Length: 153
Image (cartoon, rainbow, N blue to C red; front, side, top):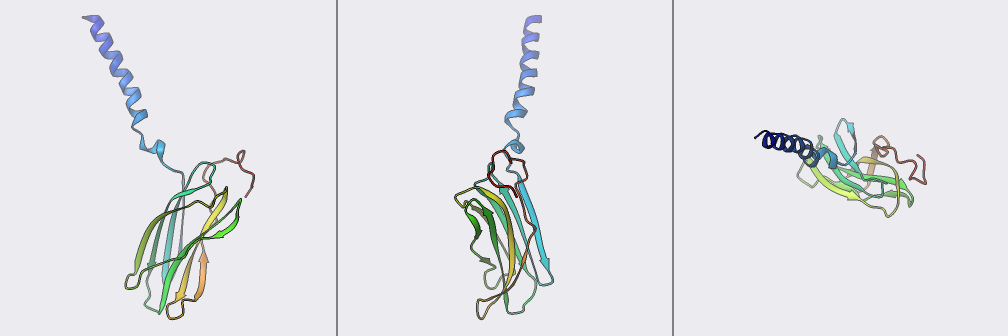
């Protein structure tokens, strides 16, 4: 009888150690950097997930808000710099008739990404011309992998 209690207690102790290790979603979470750009008539926010190395930013969560009915659309675009130089990614704009929009996307420029930032822009609706843009802070990978990088930022 004593032997059965010892085995049962040992199994329970082992399960108490193994189950939390297997069930921690935070262990699989992607390191993320975030920033917000705000002006009187708009705001934009990005959460950028940095993959190890990083050759890919994934996921990228984007939210935009337009607070003025002034004949301008609000758009945002990601800018990355790294092994393949500066890349200005596709502009995303709030759809007509809405004042907010959100997207989830990724960026894989085909080489090491040294840093990233995003721009929030006012675009004249009648012409499609960008009036001006505000830049976010420059974001670097939130982990130190400098021993793996050929670029220092």
